[in-house]
Every structure is written in C-alpha cells, then in structure tokens.
Image (cartoon, rainbow, N blue to C red):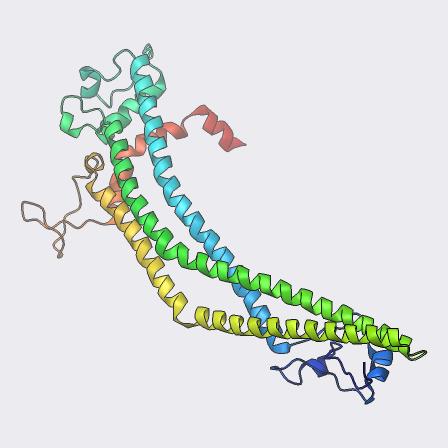
Length: 358
C-alpha cells in the first residue's frame, strides 16, 4: 500500500461538517503524507459524515414517529366506533333484563290501575320496592308503559335489532375506512420500515469502514519498522477490503438520500392533503349513518317531543300550518321536565347523600 493513501474520514468537528452539505466530508490536514496522517490523527471513533443525509435522517425520524401515531389514532377511532355500537346494545340489553326482572318480582307492577295513576305516591304499606316506583314512572314518562296502545310502546329487543342493523351499515363504512384511510398510511409505514432497515445497513457499513481504517493505522505503524513481503501482501488485501467497504457505504448512502428525498417530497406535497379529504369524508359518512339512525329508528321516534314553543319566525311548519321553532334548549328543557323525577329520586338516595357529605 502506497503512502499516498488518504481515507475519507471526518473527525466530527462542526467546522469540517458544515463545509459542503451535499458531499461526504474529507478533513483538511496540514500534512500531505497519508501515512503521517494515519499515525498522528486517526482514532477509532471517527465516522464518515454526510451532513445532507443527517438532515434528511432527522426529518425522516420525525415523520416516521408521526405516521406511527397517526396510524394508531386511526385504529383507535375505528375501535371506538365499533365499541360504541357494541356497548349501546349491551346497555339496552341490560336495561331490558332489569325491566323484565322487575316485572317478575312485582306481581304485575305495570297493571292498568298503576298506569292510570302515575303520579300517586306509594303508600307506607306498599310492598313494592321504591326502585319499582322509579322504573314505573320512567316507563310512563318515556312511553314504555303504554300497555293499552302498542304503537306507543318501546320494544327493547326490537330497538337492539335496529341498533344491530345500523351497526352493520357503519361496518361497511369501516371497511371503506380501512381501505381508503388506513391502507395508504400502512403503505407509507412499510416504506419507512424498509428505509429504516437500509439506514441500519448504512450504519453497519460505516462501522465496518471505521474498523478497516483502524487496522490500516496499525498496518502503517508496523510497516514503518520493517517492510516485509508478507506485510506488503497483507496491506494490499486490506486496501482491497477498504475499497469494497467504501464502495458499499457510498452506494447505500446514495440510495438512502434518493429514497428519503422522494419520501419527503411525497408527504410534503399533495398526498396528505388528499388523504385528509378522504378521512374527513369517511367520518362524515359515519356521522350521517348515526344521524340517520337517530332520526329514523322506529323505536326512538316514539320518544319524540310533541310540544314546542311556537314562533312567528320562518321555521318548519306542523300539519296545521303553524310554525314551530325547535331549539336544542327547548328539547333539553322538555327532557328535564319529563324526567326530572328520575334525577330527584337518585339525589334522594341515602347512599348518594352520604357520598356527598364525604
């Protein structure tokens, strides 16, 4: 190996690394002798440095992390929608069982005489538990206990079936969500994982090159004392290994810079804008399915309010031609008026009072 060899090594000083952001750094040394540089200035912690790649790598790690968080958020959103319908059916089913158990233990707790006098208080000698009175009043207020008019009676089992139907519609939206929203992010994740693997290969090539340079330093020091044919042959083999390792590193470096530049341009351009439009459109589809369910579910329609404040302003009109101003405040006020006794009874429970005092 000739003494004019000069390895492409950067010691890592900021002045040397910022000289050119598009090329691998070659440190400038005062000595023109490669062997003198290896003897005096080489140390095993040195690495080949490419500032342009380092800048791309920092941006890549940030994007990779955000993609992981975005994909996880999409998965959580999908699971929460599915869980919403599942838990809704569980709540209604549990409520139905509670009502059935109450009816069995009260010996006709919803008879015609009880329906005709919903507001009459329980007598001191009444054998029915107080919970039954609360549920009976809830039946009457919500329209659940209209036994004489089956059209106004809510069927919990039928309600559950209707929830199941709408959940299947939303499940179709979830399939669209997976294919149009999650799949593009999954594709980007696979690309990022492939790039991360190439980055690890580049780092290993850099370490290999560093180790070969360390061996070359020792070879130069050994040859300075005696220059035998065996040492010259070993130095030539080491020189060839170094050339191959250097070519491998430079190839990986060029591939990574090209792939990272393509990835960064893709994500920073129109891709994410279009992706968000699809995501937003999908959430609107799901919201519409929920809205359709609430407005058209036959069992829920039995709970519609029949009394609203009338107004002369332009608003939807009832069959008699009178304008009806329906506001959220009016709906909430009507709900509180109809169901205030439920909150009142719950607040009067002794265990709640004890808890509030604590």
